[in-house]
Image 1 (cartoon, helix red, strand yellow):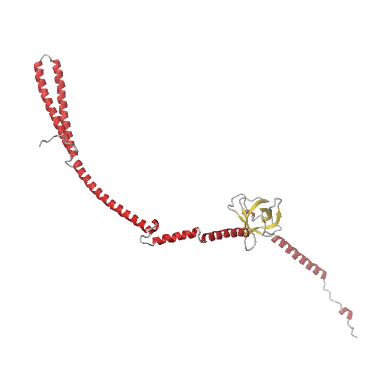
Image 2: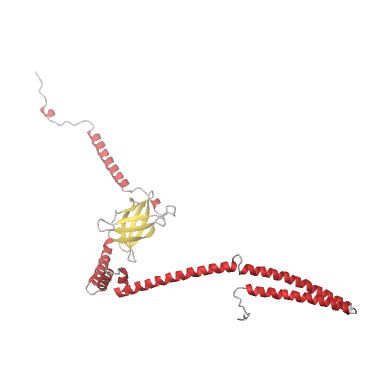
Length: 330
């Protein structure tokens, strides 16, 4: 006889072997993944990275929020962690900068806070020389703030003043209106017969007088030019008569040479006189011989004096502009 299967045993659920081990492994894997994810997130947020702390001080931290980046040359190098209000009423912006990026910050670095019309605020760092000393940890630096929204009221006030000035300049009977009227008057005069000259001098009559004066000045200059030419001709002739060949200067030189020869001869004769006088004193006893010699000597001296007188008359006659003192009988 066949045995019937047990209905109670067939209806019981199937339980695989090592089910608890498998569930434990699954839970351990899930926990490991969760821990790895948390560690990765913390690492991505820089939890395990070394930082350099920096505090920026400003009078107004509006627009700055935690998590804002500090940029250098357009690249984020740090992040705002928190804001604080100092006892002196200034705002402190606390920033953490990774040590790898801290090399871009120097003791001479300038920090700016720019707030534009569109978009949020921006923190920027500017370093002029990377050879300067590095920025120390936990340093405090002032931040330069540039808020476009704060400049708009000043710009509007300045624009209002400019428009008011333009309105005063363009109103009737203003300085600009009178200047334009005077300019129209001057340009109307320039359109006349004498052009710019009439406009500058204030009328046609004044321009005509100036032109007449210029014509007279030109005529006077032409006359002076003719006189100058005549004077040049006279001076040329005078130079030829005085300094040219056969002129007064050459004749005077000849007369001077003749006078020098005559004076030399007179000097020799005077030396002879001295010799004869010495002989006369030595031989005073022979009076007859001395008297004869003195007579001859006197005749020679008188001849020399006549030559000198004739030479002087000749020089006076040839000397330029010398007056003739002789009286001519009719």
